[in-house]
View 1: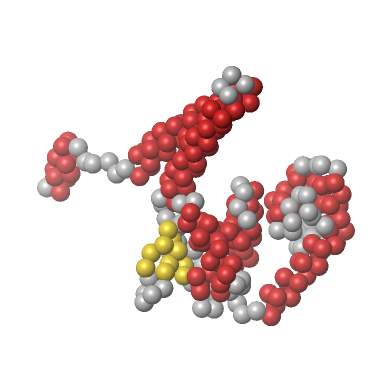
View 2 (view 1 turned 90 degrees about the vertical axis):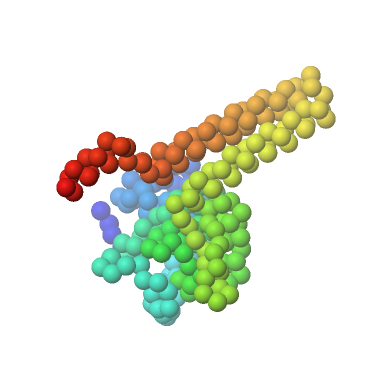
Length: 251
C-alpha cells in the first residue's frame, strides 16, 4: 500500500471519483489507500462538492511549509503525553476532526473540540488553543461560543481572569439534552403552522406528522440519555452483605 502524502495525480483521481459520485471507500480502493485518507483529504479541502485537486495540492504544500517554519506545537502548550508517537497523534487528531465535520461542525469548531478531547487535562485556555492550532483568537472565540451553546463544552474560571474551556464526562449528556430540546422546539414551531395553514389542508397534515415525529424523537432521546447516564455514571453503593464480607476480610 502506498505511504506518505497524496500525490497530485492521486488528488486528480479523487476529484474524478467525486465527479462520478463514487463513495470514499471506492475511491480509496482505486488508489490503494485507506478510506480515512480519502475522507480526510476531501473534508479538509472544501468537501465533496467543492474539492479541487490542484487547489488541494497547493494548500497541502502551503501547510507543509508553515509547519516547517512555525515553532513546535508543544511550546507553550500542554504536552500530549510522554512516550506517545507524535505522528500517530496528529493522524488521529485529523481523523477525529473529520468525523466531527461529517456530523455538521465547521472545520474550525471541529478542530477546537478535537483538541480539547485529546488533551489529557480536557481543558485549555483561549491562548493555549490559539497556540496549539496556530489560528487567530477570533476563530477560537467563535468556535468556543458555538460549542458552549450546544452543551459540548463548559467554561470555568482559571488562574487570574483567564477562562478555561472544558470538555468533561458530561459533554455527551449536555449536548444530547440540547439536541432533544431542539427536536421539541421543532415540533412546537411545526404545530404553529398547522393553525396558520388550516388544520385540514395537506400542508397542515404534513406539519402535524413532522411535529409528532419530532415529539417522539425528543421524548425517546430524553429517556435514553437519562437511562444511559444512570447506568454509566452512577456508582453502586455497597450492600450490607458486601460491607460485612469486607469487614471479615479485614479481620
